[in-house]
Image 1 (spheres, rainbow, N blue to C red):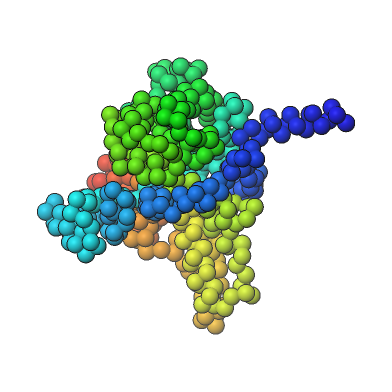
Image 2 (cartoon, rainbow, N blue to C red; image 1 turned 180 degrees about the vertical axis):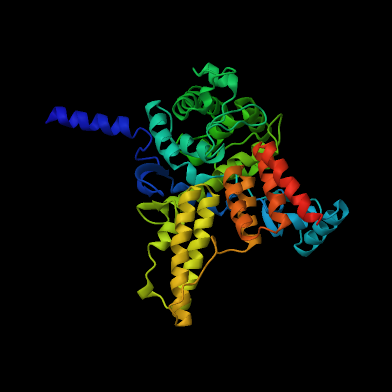
Amino acid sequence: MRYLLLVFVAFIFNGHAYCRADDPVHVVEKTVVTWNDTLKLQFLHDPSMYSGGWDTLAQSRFWREVINMTSDSFLINVAYCRKPITKVNRLVWMNQTEPEKICYKDSLSVVHCVDSSGMLYVTSGKREFYEVRKTLSSISESIKIFEEQDCDPWYAQTILLIESPGKNKAKSSVGAGGPFQLMAGVARKYGLRVTKTVDDRSDLQKSAKAAARLIRSSCVPSIINMLEERNISYRQEDLWFRLLVLHAYHAGAGNVRCVINSLNPTEGGVGLFQQIWQTTCASFKNESQNYSQIALGALLNFDALIQRDGDTVFLVQGDKHLRSFSRKNFNTLESYDYLSMCLKEYESDFIDGVIPYDYFMARVGKIRKEFAHLATVVSKSDKEVVLKKYPAEESHINEIASALTRRQRYEDAILMLKINLDMHPDSPAVYDSLARAYRLSGDKKMAEVYSNKYSNRVNR
């Protein structure tokens, strides 16, 4: 019995090293339902985001909105506090001259009583970049890897949500690569191969191990030294401490030290970060200030995602809603509205990359049959209603194709545009859009084919 007790205690200590009684962060297990599988995955939930008031900060709320907003919208906001003023369409804004933009921002400042020293930023939506629903398996796997490396798994979940979510092979403009966006020199230091032909940074397991070692052996000790030099009380489980470590991971410990030296704080907490977000020092500038703000916004959005449906996470929202549909539970008008909503959810699922094209079209076909049934009920006729391949206008299909193109999903965009080609074979815009999509995909031959067809129809 004593041996079994010791084994049990050892299991608890080793398996949950960072879920201590004094740590508010705890593991939650969820059943994740995808389009073709059901998975049991683990994530982290941090109640201190709410109890500490981090969720109420203007910066957190601002980035939550930006992360959920597509790039065809801009959010005009007060720079120093990230207070949103208004949302504008991207094309409307870009079509203005510089003097018109300045005049518009000046008028907004007057209407919203923004101090003359307060700058207004124009921030585009970032939903195309933050493909969070693609990261769930990677987060669950990396949490375990960080625990094995004796590193706080909170960093695994947070970094995967903000660095290059859903893009394991992503490379930044400064050369960082992989899901944990490691620089080549850092990656090599922690055991990864980075050559012209091999790049271990794109391997989730290898990059997770390297990131965990970097955080455990360098980032955390650096922050501890800075705080202890100033006799600032801290717990490594505090959210503000973790955010400081996150800054060291992103900007480098030297730049974080520069900010701390500049501020000379006497305590940590929310107040310290409200100062950090207004302070620049060395290479710690706007992008670095944003980093912990984005982290908070991403964590809050992620927590909402995994908590939305209790113990289950439905990645495919279209499936979640369509499975609740029953002809007997809705009248005709209600059925039409509900099925239209399901269709929009499937479009969002497809655009966000959580379902493939074939599955999307199969779901569209199923809804199409329901629409056909509704049509026969309304007309009191058994006549078969002939619906087109996809029940949408040309402009709507173009919008979906454009959204896919912004995500560099050129093959899927081309498939959607070819639906438009079937439905509108005489439309010059369809050929122009296909030529552009092929050009972006790298297929110059097909781009030229459709460009010539476009020219022929315009010059008729």
